[in-house]
Image 1 (cartoon, protein in one colour):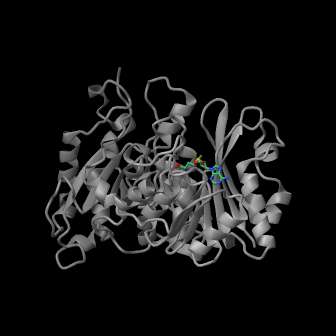
Image 2: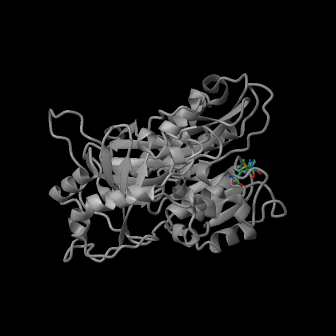
Image 3: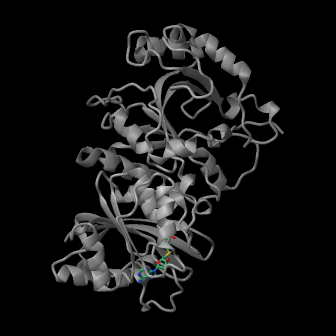
Length: 469
Ligand SMILES: C[S@@+](CC[C@H](N)C(=O)[O-])C[C@H]1O[C@@H](n2cnc3c(N)ncnc32)[C@H](O)[C@@H]1O
């Protein structure tokens, strides 16, 4: 069978050093140009995309792809603050499977969306993109698109004309940066005959040599040396993507290695630990910023707070957990933070979050103030009827009580982000989502809902509420 589609599986490898590097999300300073991304002139045709995003693969089909955009947008909003307008981002698929292998629709979608172009309309600067990518668990890497052309020589010509790599020349900011060139080819332009299946890695040394020859006029301007293992500047030629021409791109940043807080690496784990990707998704949708105060009222082993500490070491976190130390050992939880060099929670409270005294203790832990954010994965339980008391409703009643008493749990403009389970036969809006009355009493309104199917009978919905208190 002829291979017509290739996936860059090399990019899914976790390097040994990635664990330590990922903890602060700071990493080695990579060489990238500091300039705004292209802006859109008035009355001009739709702009060309300025970025290419390679999303992380998913272990289970359809598990997290629905959270990609909201996580990335949430991260950008947190990084840029009020100046970020979500509507400026336009995503479009960069892959279009045209091979001969029969695939179900869902799988096709998964392949075609694995890489997407992003148009920012000049509203987002490069440094904000880099900062957002470093905290977005579903981004594998983001590339700045330098040039598009029918030939590799054309790519180099445009790049030289645009001065796209001026910073790499002697005397410029990144003159000593190491670099390497990689070629990735997709669809019918690939050397498919060598492969057995569409999903296998394809890296053709012949094509890489061809590209290097063609790019020579550009590359010989660089001051730094080649480093194939860990270069400061990774240059890519993408061939066979949906816009038809070859692309010259420069890697700007890669997403975090969230596996360093995976349950199987931690000392304390509950029966229902939240996976790191989900924890990062929630933190980004909540928009954690410098110094944010964060409460998880159903904390368990604190997956949410670990993700928060990875994203923003300056944040103050508090966890409430009803189980005693015999089941959820708080010393072990603290070790899970300190052994990773992450900022420990300010307080890990043993108590019931539906109890006013416990919530008061949580507020006191951060100086008797309301929290900026509540991020939590409440217990799912099995509800017997629509009228059953759900953990989230109980929490909201507590928040309504505190608000009424003049000591709100969540600050005005703050967010409550949580997962809510929805079982077969239930309607999310009418059976699961808290009622408008209860939300009103708690001072909340719904900002965003997104479903994540877990199996045929159960999904969980990521919900973000805004606080108007
Ligand atoms: C779905 S688990 C959260 C798992 C957690 N995200 C983790 O990574 O381990 C829900 C947790 O809430 C706790 N819980 C249940 N009711 C509670 C309550 N009223 N107050 C505080 N914690 C509660 C449970 O003991 C359980 O550990």
